[in-house]
Image (cartoon, rainbow over all chains, first blue to last red):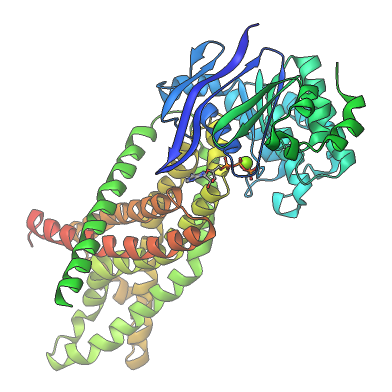
Length: 254
Length: 262
Ligand SMILES: Nc1ncnc2c1ncn2[C@@H]1O[C@H](COP(=O)(O)OP(=O)(O)OP(=O)(O)O)[C@@H](O)[C@H]1O
Ligand SMILES: [Mg+2]
């Protein structure tokens, strides 16, 4: 299978605090890969290493087979236009309205007419069920709404790959399902591959084609979500209390 | 004890020079990026407008009062030497050559560099700058270049305005004690001001504007440690910008005097 993004033997430490210790993971083209891990294990750090916000101490990051490390800023930005990133904190531009937030990457990276832009903005807002928020400032949005606008801003430029940092944390079950199905729809309709960091088993059950688990700097599991529950490992057992998986396993996508 | 203070002093000096060298690198980048597209004219215009609105009331009051007080203070002194007729010249020369540019710049620093420091600082700690970066937009060009440029362009305009108000303030002060007509006053002001009084002084306000913009942007852009860092960026940029304005002014005054001896 062709991989869209590969992190190979990535190590990252802050001072003497080793966060990632020889981590490798790959997302196949058109695949949704879910990354689990306890709070503070370095999931966000791994995503930031992939997108180049942090530089790995060693290892390699390949996007469609080409290295993302040691590129000039110009070359890196060409690649970044094809990768979306949803921040855990949403990171909306708070001096700009929702509309301006969404248009911001469109105006500068693509040559859409004003009418096309307007249409795209309305489209993505509909996808995240926030059509009415178009002229609101981020400070007037609730936490969950911010998250959804952040998601809208990530998907509006239709990248090939999206890195989601906890897309459903803090959302109610109904919105969680909507967002999870949205991720699947993007995969089905636009062939967008995803790397999804989450603790949310409901979301994982809907979106995951494959799952990996990061613990203490290492990938300790890689495979199908269903296999996770059958593992004898103490940590995995604690992490995925089997009851929850069984309750939700019916809605897994095919 | 003495050793301790000495050490601290050394650390402070070292930190100061480190800051200055990092700040220089940061500002040099401005000249590399300013000519590259995309040109964010709308942003520059927006910032200039905001900066103007934000500082206009305070610099207006300052300008007027400086002129007023300067004239009131100088009048008895000049009278003592029988040189009262030099009062318009004295007020306008002091204001145009030195007080106008420096005071406006210092107020501008207090109001604007702290604002830029806080704004960019909070964008940094809430990952908004990172968000720009990952969406392939140069945050330096969009956030920093536009702000530095706006500061550099708006401060000279503000200074001219302050100079004008100060001269008017001087006139008002004189009318309080004697009858003098505005026409005569303005004529003697115009006669006393020469090219060397106006242009170098105006030239340095561009540099002051640049200092205010780049110090604020530098502190904010490199903010760390969450909201605490935002506060630090804001206050420390005022201190640094004011200090640099005074130091640079000292050097530039010397240079001006050497280049255009009167
Ligand atoms: N810029 C940084 N400087 C120093 N340490 C950092 C930095 N960023 C992250 N860390 C450390 O790296 C570790 C992992 O952080 P990270 O944000 O990746 O956790 P996470 O797995 O995403 O957790 P969560 O699920 O809570 O978001 C933490 O212990 C954090 O203290
Ligand atoms: Mg995280």
